Image (tube, rainbow, N blue to C red; front, side):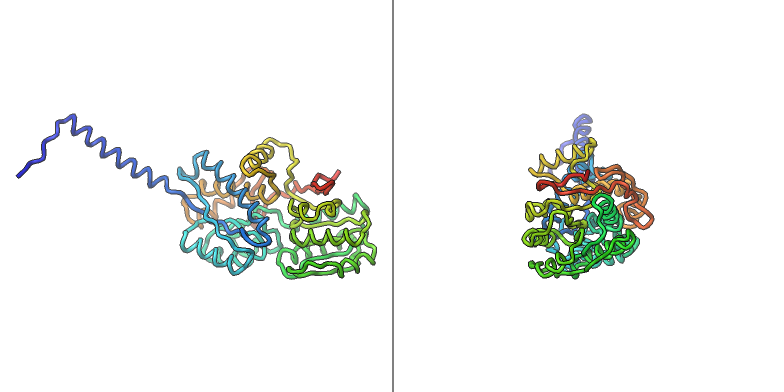
Amino acid sequence: MTHAPKLSPSRRSVFLCALLGFAVLARGAEAADPITIGAIEILSGPNAKYGFSIKNGFDLALEEVNRAGGVRGRPLAIAYEDTGGSKEQAINAARQLIARTKAPLLLGPTLSTEMFAVGPIANERKVPIIGTSTTANGVTAIGPYVFRTSLPEADVVPVTLRTAQAKFGVKKVAVLYGRDDAFTKSGYDVMKAALEKLGVETLATETFGAKDTDFSAQLTKIKSLDPDAVVMSALADAGAGILLAKEAQGFAPKVRFIGGNGLNSPKVLEIAGAAADGLLVGSPWFIGKTDAANQKFIADYKAKYGGEPDQFAAQAYDALHVAASAINAAKDVTGEAIRDALTKTKIVGVTGPLSFTPDRDPADSSGVLVLEVEHGAFKILD
């Protein structure tokens, strides 16, 4: 029988320290496991332009959060699910992230139509969900776990229309909106109410479908009515198509085209080109804001992605910082605790001060800017 050699006190001390070191390393590895939240975005299909802009904003902010030490002493990670713009895929994505990934918080989805499908699931499972681009009326009314960092159209559109009335003497308009999308239909409702409140006459209301590419019939009728402006609730592709069509029909430059949140995208300018000149949109953020935080965000975005951010990237960037702040402040990493922390979270982001009303909408709508397209670029309306 062979006996293990006895260790001297000094060697025994070294051996015990080594074991202790391995134990500390093991515990450190466990502590470094990331806290993974979920993001539901359109990353394929016609509206992926929005989803990728949002994803870029999330990822840029995520890098900053993790460089600063992460959350609760652990890295923060995002598990992405692509909806392709489908409500059914959005529902499946939410279920996947909640049931399998065990995400204690969700970001997204991209469109209000998707949120109306996904929000009830998150609310039922008591998982907070933060919309960064869902501006339709009724989004936060889905339930107490549904938040958004994007100003609703009800806050932005009236400012845009009031400015157009004061600046250009708009007295009579035609309205054109997408009839089969929750966001564009809600935008129309807001536009209709705002126009009535301002005393602006609506000469005609025309609609189009999500797959429509020919807007000549609607615009022929609208042109014959000689409006001062055409008010549009549309997503980027349809909005750009309408602008190209109005150019082809020879609308007078004095007829202003006024868009909602869906047209506040560089993609509209890329598609429509010179036909977008004169377009008016309202926005809670603009690349021309000169404050230090915004300029750093723009510089970092350009360095990482090689292009300029848009409103959707800025709102997503702020939302990720809101999420990280709430996770840090929560009493534990559960949906209920994070939800409670979100109601108290306040940050100053690139879109300005950001906190939530009791209804979980952004609390400050004072920073709405009206932008005009001039020579193929957005600028603040003089």
